[in-house]
Length: 304
Image (cartoon, rainbow, N blue to C red; front, side, top):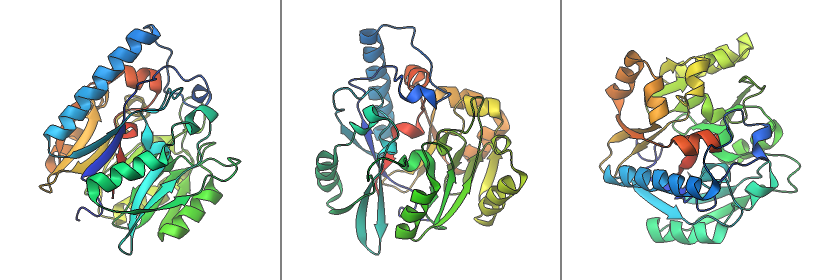
């Protein structure tokens, strides 16, 4: 596998306006109201963010950082509003419809395109699928792409419309595998809390897929793509063990980016499997996780 399939550049957005998002908490079982006041919380999460960026850059991975827009409490999770792709030597930027109104304010296409051009030298063709927002599809929050095998896995939820997902996968030329996974509230809001796919490893919470045939389909497809599967429990999923991302640096070395919570949630045997294929970068982001309801993977949008 080469860098076409695993990114060596990511976009991250500063949490300048971070706070508890009541609009998204309706469907996000991972959000918790903060113990800190707003100004102390913002200061704390800015430090968590800055240290994480430094850790990733120190490994030789390129990080594009953007400022967040006003009134965007979840802007630190940019992977929900866009994704980038390379199809037949053309670079594409897909823009997605997000479920809640305050998250739609995060979109900053012109600024993103300018930064992508400055960093990569590439021009991106924009594919905007937002429409009238009657359907939601929150990018790589809901899509887990296996770019080598041209497959997209998606857990159907109010934030992941199956019909719209088929349209995107048709444009990409990818096979779509849909299923439903469940947390303690109901359907899991984002696939990326229960599934992560790297070069040689897949992290899966199979326990969250209640339908036997759907679970078998997911497992069979992961196995046929030569992935070593780490099956985490529902408890481990709540420790953000599924919300991790594999990246490469400019020297083609593989890294797994994960939070301290996730790192502590894995068993020693599971960490050995991860370490066999990648080097871990462990980021301490407890306030972003607890209040925002997303972890390390949610904070990074890959650039292809």
